[in-house]
Length: 306
Image 1 (cartoon, helix red, strand yellow):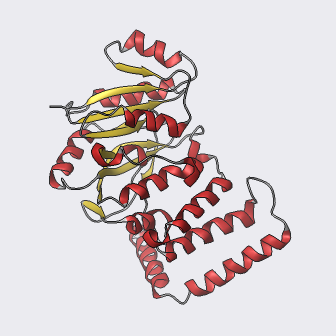
Image 2 (cartoon, helix red, strand yellow; image 1 turned 45 degrees about the vertical axis):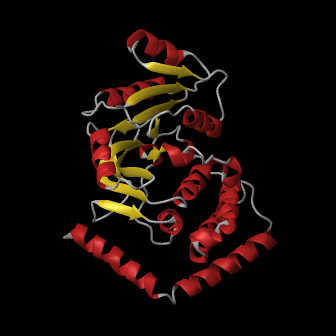
Image 3 (cartoon, helix red, strand yellow; image 1 turned 90 degrees about the horizontal axis):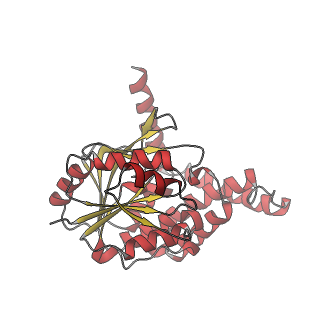
């Protein structure tokens, strides 16, 4: 019985989408339902798939939907125990599905699963890994543990969003709200999911996550980051004040440097933010954790040199 649906979310990238689809079709374990959700605002991908891959299940979204609505539409169509929202510019390694199934069998009570990734550029050149871990599995027990991976001053990276596989009975009831972070609302969504149970990351690199000029994440939005800060503050009891302070420092530093979406802040606001940044730095230097992290980074550098 098929228990997993993989949606490949597509939008105006037919060349990349074809590679992503082929990587799914080549999986060593084919016990899943593959759905191509074509949210393009042209017919280029639809015509390509109908001419070359005629057996695929394609769902054409006409008119095209906003990103959050596209996610929600796919989730509403899930009728299997688990689902995945894979992106059209990324690639699955041959054993992605098989390895994820094995992890799910070992950790059956988790509500979501993801894995490590090999970061690649537009040409497919390797650029590093998505996160670091000495353990086979990273156990994300609660919202604070997840938020630390994203916002702590001492992070070890994150599992890539498109690699996640979710338990349908719980996650389909949780909606992505663009007001919680705009283009960064997927992070708020994952935090909401983590309130419901444990998330497991596989440290094996099971997908290739592509960084390219058209990545939405490459376009900065300080307004959306301010929305995300507001969300974190509203959820302070879950994520903790330290995480909020760390993210506020990151954001205020960015605001002082680049302004609000490219517009320079008035001097009086810049002075207030700089005062906060100074106090934050002074407090950080009084914490033992700061020096533990510096020793850890120094050890990494020495290991590479030797």
